[in-house]
Length: 302
Image (cartoon, rainbow, N blue to C red; front, side, top):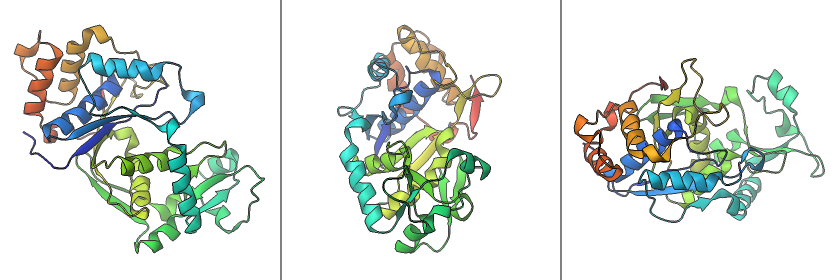
């Protein structure tokens, strides 16, 4: 049984690059159950910051699928595409504090660095007329908040201790060269704005967490509690994803889908729920939600 954590504000934040598949439903259900078992609030945020990857109508299909599975959110969904002013304000704040700089490095150079950036553009003066990304100056940020170590560690409540040493990985992009706001900046600005206290999401995002923690601290807020569940994979080990052509879930089999996800989460729903409706399954799942039973691994085969 979960012990109520108040206040608890969680969220599910899909990108509209396609309909929900079983892996994304698994994340939505885990996030929803963790919030409800802790008598918390649950939001849905549509992360539509990357138009080239988005599929027309996918946002509504996602919302319809969540509704079909009785995963009901507590306020109207937030769309990141409508939040540019907030992201721009945060970016200007970082620039003003000397914690952001322009970077003109191309993809070939970054690939040669194995994506561990050497902070080369920190000392360069790059014209506003030159196409450039904007990077977060991790050392300047750490100094401003009096963090002595470059190794940002955190305790994930499922995966255990994790972190990132920015001395090795370097400064990261918060505004892309193509003019789009980067995920790392937008997700932090939105989590702060919505007062998110707990984040339950897939382990594929575990390596982004230290970046988000450092940004959150830089903006003067405590980071959320993180719980990264294992992602579903094909037999080949490849993650189920829209990019890998994962099959859309069948909304007409919602009860079956929920029971399947509960088994992936090691919650052991009883046989008496085999023919139950979504409301009955969720009522049982909330009452019996047991976070320590969630598999403590990065992935599980579907």
